[in-house]
Length: 128
View 1 (tube, one colour):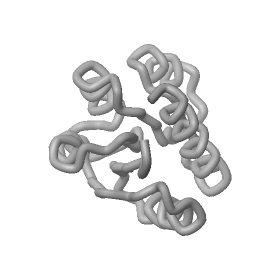
View 2 (cartoon, rainbow, N blue to C red):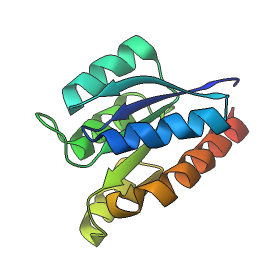
View 3 (cartoon, rainbow, N blue to C red):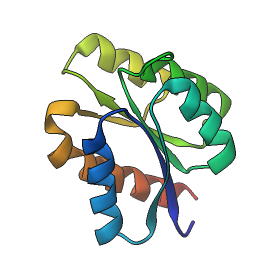
């Protein structure tokens, strides 16, 4: 696996800014698409064929958890991270159960997202 292709589903610009920063320091990571709702994210998965999808928990139309659940069922080979709104054990248990490989809290996004992406990239590379 050469370049890791990432699709981001989040309506907040800060997530995209962080991923753009990760791309600058890690050239083998490419942000291939950005969706603002769960339906758009699932459509873009088919078009862009990402290796990793990062879903925000709260999305318009189709929430990130439900979209992630669909993706994990239909394409379990794609890595999935979740941006959660707060440290809620019920949410964490649900996303673990559906197959999400990791999550970061929105309030700690700047410090946790780069590490979570690098960890999942490493996991994908070792399983390839």
